[in-house]
Structure formats: C-alpha cells, structure tokens
Image 1: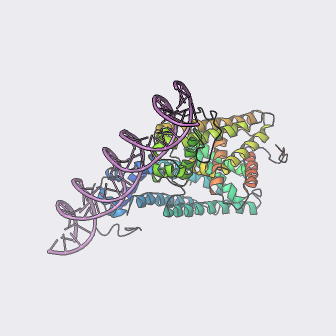
Image 2: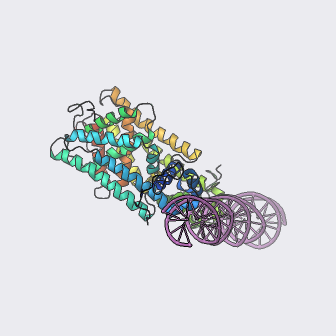
Image 3: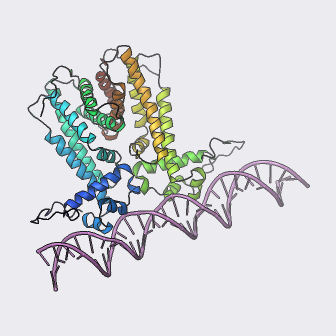
Amino acid sequence: MNRTSTNSAGSHNGRSFHVHDGQAAKRERILASALKLFAHEPYQAVTMDRVAEAAGVAKGTLYLYFQSKDALYLGVLSDGLDTAYRTYQSSADPGLPVVERVRRSIAVMVEFYDQRRDFLQFFATVEPRLAEARNRIIEASRERGFNFCASLIEEGIRTGVFTRIDPRLATFTIHGAIRSLLLYYGASRPVSELSRELGNLMLRSLGADPSEHFKPEHPQ
Amino acid sequence: MNRTSTNSAGSHNGRSFHVHDGQAAKRERILASALKLFAHEPYQAVTMDRVAEAAGVAKGTLYLYFQSKDALYLGVLSDGLDTAYRTYQSSADPGLPVVERVRRSIAVMVEFYDQRRDFLQFFATVEPRLAEARNRIIEASRERGFNFCASLIEEGIRTGVFTRIDPRLATFTIHGAIRSLLLYYGASRPVSELSRELGNLMLRSLGADPSEHFKPEHPQ
DNA sequence: AGTATATGACTGACTGGTCAGTATATGAAC
DNA sequence: GTTCATATACTGACCAGTCAGTCATATACT
C-alpha cells in the first residue's frame, strides 16, 4: 500500500537546492499541497493535475509517491492524525494533578488545531463511512485520542476529584466542544481566552471547581 | 427553481395505488432515496443513475424535480434542516423554567437526530466550504439554531440561574457534544439515558445544579 | 553505461445532463 | 362511453466533458 514509507531520506548528499531539495521531502511537499486543496474543496473537485501543479511536480510524479488519489487523501489524513496524537501525547505531564492535566489537554488540543486550520477543516469533512482503509485509520486514531482523555477522567473520578459520570460521554463532550468551537466561533475573541474558558466550562461539567486549583500559566 | 412545489396533489381521483402514488410525493421519494445514498457514500460516489434506480424513476425524471445533482444534494440538506429547526422550535415551552427548557432542548435534539441517523450522517459530512448556495443554507440554519440556544442561556445568566459565561461558547459546546455523542458513542447505552446524563453534564457546566430542579419526565 | 527519478501527452472509462419520443391523464364533444 | 385533442409526466439512449492513471521518453546522478 505505501511505498517510500520512511526510507533513505538523507543518504550522504550535500546539495539541497531550491528545486532538487529531495527524496522524501518531496513527499511532504506533495502532502502539504494536497492538504491545502482538500481542506477547501471537496475530494471530487480536487484533481490530481492541480495537486501536481500546486506541489510543483508533474502528475506522473504523484504516482511515484502515492498509489492513487485515494492513497494520497489517506496519506494526508494519517499524516495529520499522527502529528495530532504525538502532540497530544507529548504534552502529558504525569506530575500535575488531574484537574490541571485535563485543563492542559484541552488547551493543547485547541492550540494544535487552531494552528492547523487547514487540517482541521480537512478532518472535519472527511466522510466517516467511506472506504474501509480510510475508516480504519480514523477510527483507530479517534479511539487512541478518546481513550487517552477518558482514562484521564476516570482517574479523576477514582480519586474523587470529579463526579461519577460516564467518562466516555464526557470525552465526547470535550472533543465535540473543541471541534465546534474552532470551526464556528469567529475571530471575535482570542483563541487562548476561549480555550481557558472552555477548560473551566468542562471542568465544571465534570463536577470540579475550576477556580479552586487555578494556577496562572506556569511558563514551560 | 422549484416546480411542482406544493401543487394540485389530490385533485379528485380516488385511486392511489402502489406505484402511481403521486405528483409531489414523488419529490419526497427522490429526496429520501438520495439521502440514504448520500449518507453512506461521498457525493462523488453517488451517481444520478443510482439515485434514479433507488427512487424507482428514470434518470430524466430527477431533472424534472431538481435542476442538477447539486440542487438535489442541496434539497436533501435544506429539507432536513427545515425539519430539524421546526422540531426544535416547536418543542419550546415558554412556561417552563430555564433549566428545564435547556434540558428539554437537549433531549429533543438528541432524539431528533437519533431517529434520523441517515440525516445525521449526511449532515455531519457536508463540506462546509463548498458551493456558495450550500454554504449559505447551512450557515443560516446553524445561526438560527445557535441563536435559539444562546438566547436561552443568556436568559439563564440574566436571571442568575447560570454562571456568567459566554453563551455562544456554551452553545457550541452543547451542539458539539450532541453531535459527537450520537456519531461516536456506540449502542452500549440507551440514547435516552445518555441524553439525560448529557443534560446534567451541560447544566453543571453552566453553573446550575442539575439535581436541584429535577422533575421526573412529566408526561406529554 | 546504467540506474533512479521525473515528465506530460495520451487514453479509456465514467457520469452529469439532454432531448426526442412515449405513456398517461384530463377533458371536451359527440 | 367512446373518440379525439391537448397537456403533463416520464423515459432512457446518447453525448460531451472530465479526469485518474499509464507509459514512452527524457533527465540527472554515479
């Protein structure tokens, strides 16, 4: 299914000029161009010719890196999801109390998608019940993210910080909220502010007093 | 744009057999068939031939009722949104206290989409940044729904039932939560139960004690 | 030379939309 | 109630455009 997965990359060459930048970096360029297009137009409307043009390569080249249009679409998707999950995961700080970790998780995710509007848009309009492969990727990734969040909430319940609620339900609430917040709330308020307020909202919904443990933005 | 809108219908004929059911009812049949297809496959994959086949009419007939494939898609969309908003609106009971009205709104909306999984699926995957017309319909409908909800919350804040939060933010949270709840929560728990718990969750996030005003499911 | 990579004109399949023609309904005239 | 006339609803073979994917050729690199 995938070739050129994570191969060679930088053998021993010294040159990396403007055009001939690369081997596998070109794959990134194609993915980036494709994302930009897919984010603003439906699958159907994005032609391989235009992807090629945007990426600055010939159409045939696309087929050296991706088996098909579908595979390209899928590549964009899994690439983005991987990054998302890595970011999400890496921001976890086991030292902090649960309330803060929840707050932090929300903030990180909001920030992540806020800085990647294209991917957000793209991801928001992926057809869930589509081709099997596509489905499995999303499903799996969603589960990963959800479980991460749900177990956090579970811990909170266990330790008595949160009310006894369905962690899965709460997780969906949080993720749904972030999604619709970023997609539909205009630019009338700065995102960081919204993010904080959303955190409070969510913590309150979990039965925790958000003001209680508040500590203002300890730098890094 | 639309012909056969709400015309003649039943002149004076007595017969209405299985096939020759109708004039404008056929439009509904086409919309229903199209919805079923669009809900499970991307726009691209749904051909007019298959819509025609599913609706039991010839392809040409589709073009008697809809100007184009896009118009058909759009028809499915606005049809569903109209129904949604009407349901939403008609469930409003100005006599109830705010807390109960919020609870009720959530319940009604969850139930509505739960009974219309196809439309939910369809609606969830509509490409937001698509054709202008499509956009305007969704945008307008979303605003209507949001405003309805937001003003409810505003009232709650004014009357001191809710904490001072951004009503718009809270609205997005609620809608996002409903959406992701229905789309991703499996069948492991009955929807009515989830709906109630979600109501409590949301009320708590708004700063109201959900158990306080609780009254068990007054019939009708 | 030989290998890997890139190109872009070409093709074959697909599908939205059309339209000339058929079927059905309505109704008037006898 | 039969016949004919007119209007309306429907049909499906057909066409023209589009586009994913191919491949013979070219170019760069070793």
